[in-house]
Image (spheres, rainbow, N blue to C red):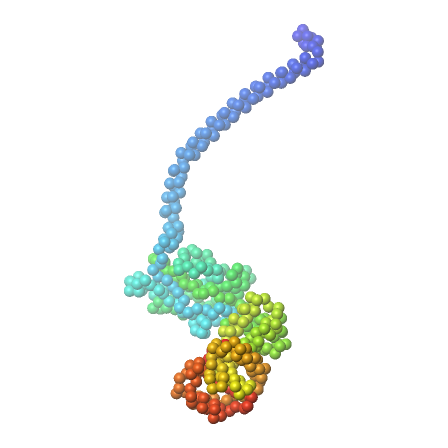
Length: 425
């Protein structure tokens, strides 16, 4: 009580200092406790790390052992490093465009054929393979897009297309077949679903062995194809267009679309009309399709050029000095100047320009062309060298005599026909 009384007699400043020093002593004792705790944690952590480090070789060894003895991993490594001795393959292929609900066949309408390739056909093991059971499946069009020669069975299986909800099977029919002497044919298979939902927009057909023969047989695949709804078959594009095909059969020209309507307004209804204007006045045709980009224009023209102009050859004479020989799409085959037959490529620039203008006249008067008696013409050159050789500056004299004598029907200033196979300019 006496000490307490003395404290009460101390000034407020000294009292505050006393309280502060008492608090510091408590903090110091707390810091020492934290230091001891931290040191203990460090010792525990060091022990745990040391134990973990000591176990690393043991864990790595265990993981490697499991990896090496895993059958699926071993099989995958083996498949990658050692190509199979036996391979299935399609000996004919699908067309680029296939329609649903129609029987699958090759580009010529024949059944797809599957056969077996073996490194050694005389090997005893190959005889079992030649009668194995196989299954036809649908693959994503992106599978093997880099055209690799080999792949693993897992890679193949992972790219099999699964049915979509509410649509059902992608492919129906007799899809499990038995090889006979190493061959099989697909007689009954039909696409039910189209390929639009795939990222690539395409399918492939694949074939795999379903018998366990003790050795892997590499699966076979077709080229990619677009599978479209059968309702679009009526407006399909022909890979090789025909002269009488509607012009909308050309790529990038939609039926009743902008390009189709523009061409119809200019009197171009079929591929023949299209090519005739292209070869006589490309600028005019490009002006009709002014809304087409350069890339689309090139695609349309290149597709049209695949068309076979046929074996028909025309001649056009607007004066007595120059006669043009043209094919059915107004490509210049040959030029007659006076008594000389000159290939178009050998004409000088001035005469080429003149011939170009003459070809435009032929195009403008195409409806006035009069057909010739083909039988008379054929008899004149049947025993002679091919006409395609004759028109390259080697016209058969007998044929020239027929023209001069007027055996082939013609009229002054009126175009007339000749018939032959040729390539033009």
